[in-house]
Image (cartoon, rainbow, N blue to C red; front, side, top):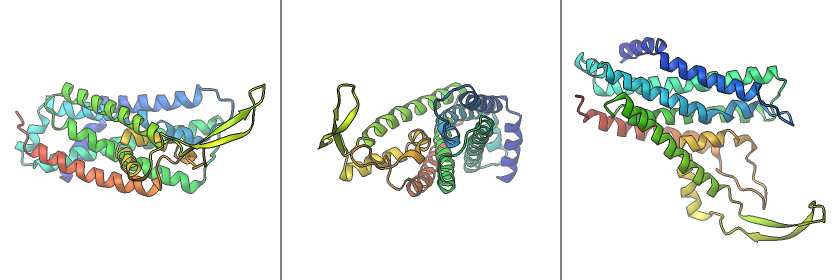
Length: 285
């Protein structure tokens, strides 16, 4: 497998679609940092982690295109005919896709850091929290790679793999947004009193929010949310601001720095197992 991985690594370095995706990801970050004006000085972390969603989507599509090109030129069949097992081929493509995800994630975060420093921004979050968020982002990138390879490597053509990747990303985005809206509902709401100028002068009453999800249903909803890499990429962009404030806001995920890595690792194992099972039985015509 090491020889195959080394050969594919050198191939991807020369791949135009990979570098095109990387350049667009970096330019997107540069635009967000350098070309936007803010009333208050934002934290560097908001730029470092706030663009993870776009990075995962763009890199995912690039990875699907790269795998599709392997089918188009017959590289997949050639690898198997020369003695490489299907498991070796699948794990090699998964390693490459994971490497692409992590590389683009890190290079875009570094770009955001440099551009933010140039504009004179600083960090608003503790260093330990930043490290934890960064680790969570890496695990989320691995899950996204596992999802892309599962669908792309089990489809015959470049176009079908690209379409499948786009549809999966769209589905995960829509599902994640719905779960997020459900989880962010606070347990209690407050009726405020206002003066004639519309300024808050006090609290009138506190009442139970009928849309709040609690008990076992919240555990299930939270778990589904964590297993959605696109949804979690949104969350990681604001994780450092997610404090539980009584009557105003509920935590989206309880103990995220433990749950996200553990669940992501378990999800990668399951997705890889499913992908291998299907790929081994796939008719490579």
